[in-house]
Length: 38
Image (cartoon, rainbow, N blue to C red; front, side, top):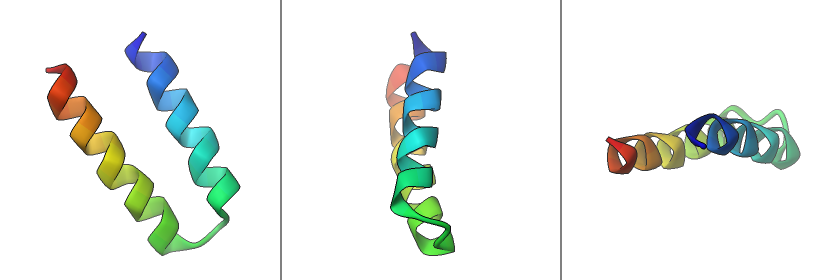
């Protein structure tokens, strides 16, 4: 289940574009989901 979320966020990061800022924003959301999962 958690791996599916990671892949899903990965697809979103690519859709946002190759912007480094966009990727860091997605990583921030992923970090929040990761802490909630723990």
